[in-house]
Length: 282
Image (tube, rainbow, N blue to C red; front, top):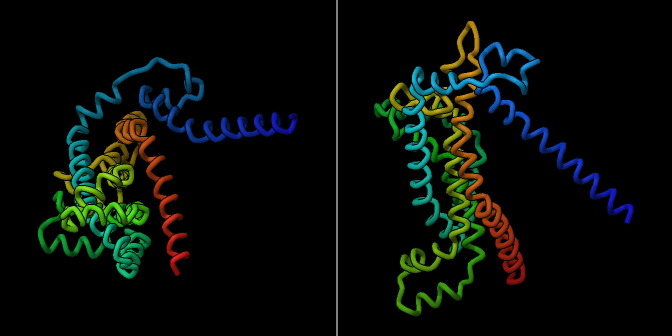
């Protein structure tokens, strides 16, 4: 009994320590967004200070952050939707028809650092006149979202019972109808999980936007640079901007955390089961 109590106390202490390490930066960021520059620099006013909303007012009035929010939302939603339209059929083909070679190509595209695509993308889009356009940003963000969606969904599709699809074929459904009416509804948890994570990756993407975006299509991560200059850094405005960037992702994570956890767990279990089934067949 004493060992169990000690283990529980140690586990609780480690949990609190991890929470403090990971939560404190977010708490500091939130508090700093309501401080003046002098208050942020003063150690005596870390937790006790007179709050102000000037940072948030300057973010929306002086720096026009509403425009950047709209740009980020357009790019993230469009890249996620297009990645789903292409990635779901691709994942189903890899899972059902054992296209390991095609799956390996997608995996390599996911492993290769995104910066290696940056210069070719810029040359291509500049020749086509698509720099500072939503098209270039959406396509570049799909380099991250599309392989991610494919590799999450392969395990889901491999775990689905073949009998259900065969029953649909017997009832007169074409392969496309089986995919749309049977497979996709049964894979709802995986689709939600992969689309949410793809959206988050696109929302936070910095590398492609800094090269391919311009004044018209500048996204939130790039807009943060407005608070940095050669002489000083506007920490209050920077923290307010960081809170604005974090808020949508945080809300999505809180709302959909159950689907994400269940989806990732289900995908892992289905992947293990399908691997075990293949071993028994061989």
